[in-house]
Length: 293
Ligand code: HEM
Image 1 (tube, rainbow, N blue to C red):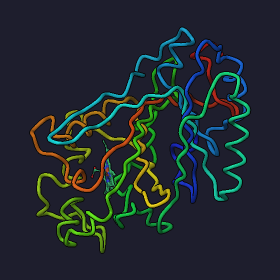
Image 2 (image 1 turned 180 degrees about the horizontal axis):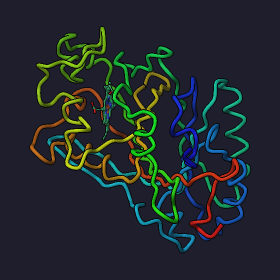
Image 3 (image 1 turned 120 degrees about the vertical axis):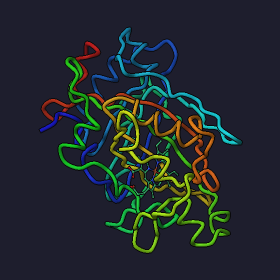
């Protein structure tokens, strides 16, 4: 059994709300974090701490760093760091709204909520992206998932490192493509989720094939679709034992290695990008002992 936050190893919930917080200048976050330790169980509510927060406490977590900016041919991958991220998971939107308000109150002494994203599962068990393609098929499972997503390093064992990006889809543009072009963007057939042998090098699953990296680059993805007004996309989330595997994949997507850009960029782009340290849990509470709390 791993002592990571249980949400990392569980399937995505029917509904979720992502909350991003910044630290209010010249406040001491310790009291709020002590309250958070008990309120966030790692299962209904997953918590991730950003580098600025860890630094404000006068501490450091070796693997934690700022999200890097990338630029490829005509594409920008922004870095939008934050102090704290909460992933509220549930099945009732009203309950999520109330839980959000509770956390805002609990953290009010030191944190301000600066972004809220409402997310959901599309098509039940298939767990599709809004383009209709199944997402998460090649996620490692069981012990392999733990090895990919959870650190066993002494002092922080049970920790995980979360890369999160809000992507916005241009659905109109996507819909101007033929089904064959769409399948070639992903490298899989939408109709039966089969991987295509003849997919171009720009196909997303060719860019990111986890066993093709040296060393292999496995992560556990728990992404969820989002929609607001007429806009929509995917909240991409990847949990790793460090950020190295994610960064290797992202570099290949932007064409940094070989000049070939991931075909996904034809219809979607990242609006945000941030890294968070997800502390382990102990007795149903966050274990913040690595920060002296
Ligand atoms: C809007 C953005 C994205 C969408 C819609 C998307 C969608 C998908 C889909 C449909 C698959 C195929 C099924 C599966 O194995 O899950 C896939 C695979 C994958 N994606 Fe993404 N993805 C996005 C962004 C990213 C990003 C930013 C990364 C990492 C930097 C990434 C990493 C991966 C990996 C590692 C795989 C599995 C590759 C393999 O080993 O076969 N994806 N994605």
